[in-house]
Length: 353
Image 1 (spheres, rainbow, N blue to C red):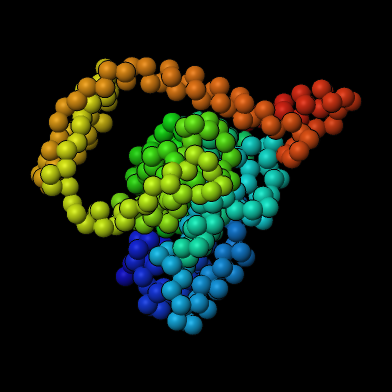
Image 2: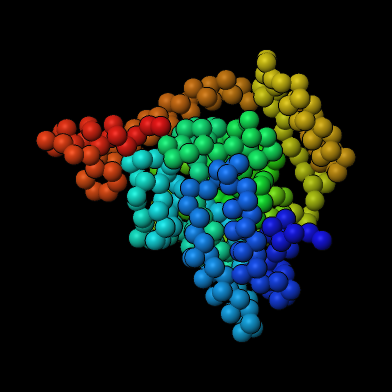
């Protein structure tokens, strides 16, 4: 029999709606799993046990009353600690925000709750999402659940590790230059960086605003689509959010890939590419072709400038976004004899691992 923490997001939610299991049972199973594996994995910075159980009880009451609590009915999820959660500390894995408790939910957090999800905690990341290994968190290191001697990727390493380890059924991460996709690859789960503007950034701590996007991580494509369905859509609180209607992602999955045209950029097969990586890509291409997709070689000649351009944009925007942490409005304040010294000492004490 499949353990509760091993169920897919879809199956777990369906069982709650059918009253075959309760949200409280799912949440307790997740909390037990967290307690069992966290000493080895270190994915969570904060576990919200009391809040999660209270939310699960509320879901179960709604189900008992004949209500549909939503597509994510009563299922435990985790949220990267770059995303605001009302009443629960949100640290960006930095000393400077170690005691910061938001007064509101980010739009994506609110939408997950509205869809019936139960937040079981906040997940580790590289400090202010700047990194690719989750070794650069000021509050602890996350390890790959498949091999503790290896990293889980980053910056959303806590999200990838928690899903892979069965600590939650799905999670949210943020992706600026690979921060959802890398942990998904390193931990063997599915991660998606949505098109810019598809998902609201309101309530998300900024790294590089023109590149940041919130994305879901889950155990399979269908669960990832279900998460994206819950969080996508226009938001008046975010001027960059797209007003375009959100498609039914689950229905799109049912259509299959027959006739779909895909481009395979020549420039992505670079010198020094590991043979195992290339073999994996080629195998995926063969499988797509077997299923009826048309895969064509294409050229993206500006690929060679991508990383250099990313570092210019990301660091310029980060320097502006991180200038707001001055020890005055919120966050760590270090004692000093003058205003200038307070800025300097607060930032020196608050930033860096």
